[in-house]
Length: 378
Image 1 (cartoon, rainbow, N blue to C red):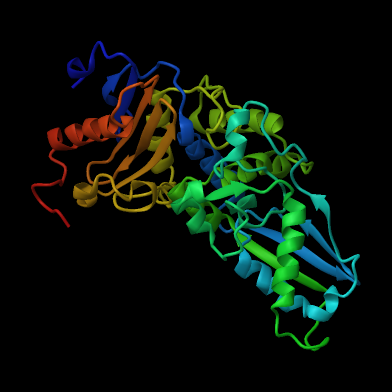
Image 2: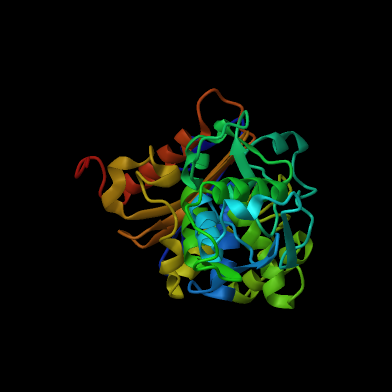
C-alpha cells in the first residue's frame, strides 16, 4: 500500500498495529504531524484514566435573595433543559424578577479565567467551534447567529455550526436566559422553594458527547480540569499540558515526544505522530479501556455519519479530525483486533482529504478480509 502513496504533494502518515503491538503497515509514521481533533483521544483518555467514567461534575446554584450564586462545576453540558431544572428546584418565578438588581455571580471556579487559548487563531473566534472556555456555561457558550430567540440543544450546534456564534459575555448570557426561563415558569409563590439546586454531569456523558460530535468546548473544559484534579487549584492550559504528557508517559512506559498546547486540537502548535497514536489506542484496548474507545463514533454515527457505512460489520470505532489542510482518523477495528491512525497535513487539493483517508482504511480492510461492501450494505 505504501508505494501507491509515494511522492504526494502533501504529508500522509499512517500506522496500523496488531494486538501483539507490532506495526504491520506504516508510512512516515514517526513524522510529527498536526492531529486536529485527534487530540481529543489524548484529552479524553487521560480524563478517563484520572477521574473514571462515573466521576461527577457538580454545579451548585444557591439562591440568595435576588442573587444566584454558581459554584463548583464545570458545566459543559448545561443546556436549556438543565437551566429549567435549576429554576424549578429553586422555585423561582416571575415575581423574582421584579428587582433590577437580579444578578448571577460565580465562586470557587475550578478552571482559570483565561477563556481563549493563546495558540488559537484569532479569526476563528467568530465561529461556534471556538467559543470562550469558562467554568460555567450555557449551550457551550454559543447562541444562534443573528441573536435569534428560537430554542435549540447541543446537538443542533454541532449539526449546523454555521448557524451559531460564540456569546461575547458567557455570564451575561446565563443571566439573560435565566430570566427568560424564570419568566415562562409556572411555579407559584414560594411553594417547593429550595435555597440550593444542583446540576450534575457524569464524565462518561461528557466523553460520549465530546468524542461523538467532536465537541471542542467539552474537550477544553476536560483538558483544563486535569490540572485542577491533580493540584486542587484552578486548571490552566499550561499546567494541563504538562500533566497530560506525564500521564501518557506513565501509561505507555516511555515519553511519547509529543507537543501539546490544547485539548481539542484547535491549535496548530500540537504535534504528535501516527505510530504513537496507534500504539496508544492499542494499549488502551489491552488495558481494559474499551469503555473509552467505544465513545468514538462508528460508521454512520456522529462525525462518521456519512463515512464508511459499508463497513459497519468491521466494528470500527474511530475519532475524526479536521482543520484547513488537515484531516485525521484514528481508532480500533474490533473484527481484526487492529489499531490505526491516519493523518494528512498540508493538503491543498480540491477533494476532501477525508476521502483519501477512507480510501486507505478501506484498502487495508479489504486486504485483511474485513467485512465490507461484499458482505453487507446495511
